[in-house]
Image (cartoon, rainbow, N blue to C red; front, side, top):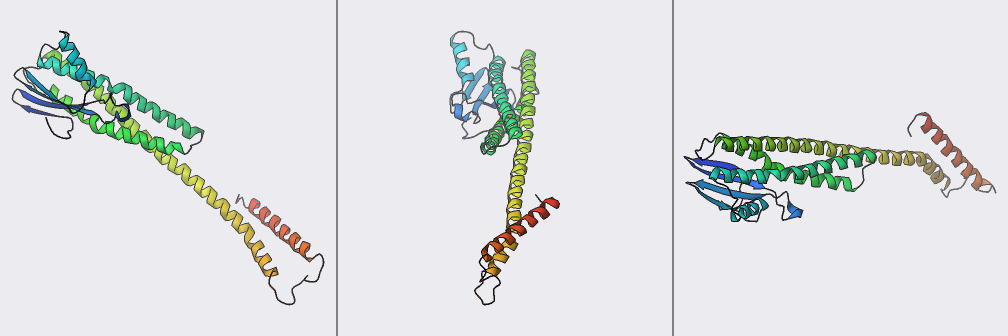
Length: 259
C-alpha cells in the first residue's frame, strides 16, 4: 500500500484482498503515459485506498459519496473505480493510434527530419502504456476468479466487461507497437537508401574527374620538353582535350547505366 512504485496486481487472503491498478494521469497532460497507481485494500466492509497523486476516478467517487450516490458495497466500490479508470484509457490509445497514422502519411509523402522524433515519442508513450495496461488484464482475470463473498454475480459481469475492454486496449497497443517498429525500420531503410545514393553520386563525380586530374597534373609538371609549351593555342588545346575526355566519360557512364 505504501510502496514507492508498484505494478498492477491482486493479492488475496481468505476474504481480504489487495488490488493495485493504474489510471490515466489526466491532471498532468504532458505525462499522461506515467499512469497513477491506485492501491485498494478490502476487508470486512472496510476499504482503504492510497495514492501518491490525485486521480479523477477517485475524485469523482468522492463526489458521489458526498452527494449520497456512492457505492452500496465493497464490490460496487471496486466496480465503480475500475469502470472509471478503464473508460478513460480508450481515448488516449486512439490518440496514439492517430499519431501512428499521421507518421505513416508523412512517410508516404516523403519523410522529414521530424519523423524519426515522432516515432521515438510514439514508441516511448506506447511502451509506458503497455507496461501498466497489459498487466491489468491479468488483474481482472484474478478478480473474476477470486470467489470472494463480497463480489456478487453482477459485479463479476461488470469485471468481465472491463476485462474485454482491457483486452481490446492490449491488442491495440500491441498493434501500435508493431506498426511503430515497421515505421522505424522503413525510416532506416529510406535513410540508408538516400545515403547510398549520395555516396554513389560522389563516387561517380570523383571517377569522372580522376583522369582529368591526372591529365592536368601531368601537363603541369615543370620539366623541359613539355609539348605545346611554346604554342600560342596550347592552353585551349588542353582545355578542349579535357572537355572531350569529360564528354567521353559521361557517355560511357550513361551507356553502362551507372547514373
